[in-house]
Image 1 (cartoon, rainbow, N blue to C red):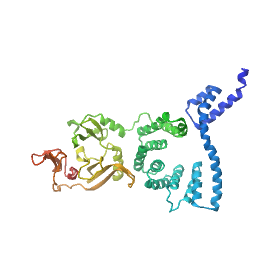
Image 2 (cartoon, rainbow, N blue to C red; image 1 turned 90 degrees about the horizontal axis):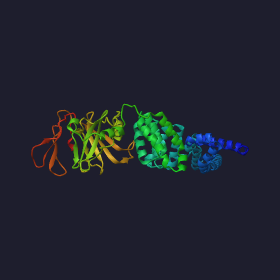
Image 3 (cartoon, rainbow, N blue to C red; image 1 turned 45 degrees about the vertical axis):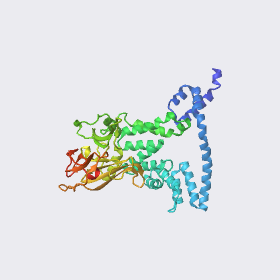
Length: 449
């Protein structure tokens, strides 16, 4: 007992130091129990496992000392020489110190209408995000991403999406977030996207993205785990706010697609007619909860998948029409055959491997180009673009029948007959109707064959 008492004050000191470090760094919660219940031994284990590896981060503290010394020097210098370069360096140091208001003020003095460098504009946008001035941040970040979409390893476009989410632009934010998460794995981006999904009442998807942040942790080196701790904490806090099972009435796009994929190949009972754009490929409509989805199937290999990204197309159409569409409520006339998918080699030019959809909605003939690459000249940038082509054929005014379109193998001719699609053998013969549901208001388009 006397021997152990020699270490008594030092053991308590070790425990206090370990608890202070735990509070500041917030590692796994189990360490608190180790420190408290195992006493000095547990504190010593904690110090070896968590504190000593963190010593590598002390360099930031030493850097901070030099940074603060440099800030004082520049603060005095700009009074004598208010050059843009001096203000920019001072703003960068303020930003690194977390003094976002001062950083923004200095960037305002460093940036002029003739500024070509994107870095100060981007960094001012970052400061504005931290200050909660999302409208100003969106303006700066959009300027940067318009000129360089990949700026700062795609963090710029992810922050732009975050800013749009806070400025009443959910459609644009969704489009930008989806692109950012396609090309970046930043935990910050995932957490911001999950937070946005919560605000849009999409808890199931929000939970998925928050869980992705935590799923990265086991495969990370320990030094990266320590740096990512703030985002792990935010992800866990977000998950605590979300129900484990969503009670939302509308199913998410992924749930709907999973349900659609479980439906057998269409039959007569489903009131849908498969369309064969190629010899071994067909597409068809599948009814799901709240609407329909469109799938394509490879007859040769027996593989099925969504015909297009329903979520992205819903976002684009919502932006273009001002209405609110979901993946299962796309405004395509029922049944699915009243819009046509064009693959390579059709009348209209389509990027190789891509496709387009044409349909009639609201008395207008619409076309949606589903491109492979993102078009950064559009606002918001997207790979889907929908435009109205003009009014649909008015009642009783069916256009003169154009020349029939031959099939790829040259055996058949396709044409429009009384607003419906029909085929006949090439060179003449009896015609066969492929559809009977066309009308003057919602007829099949000859140019889409």
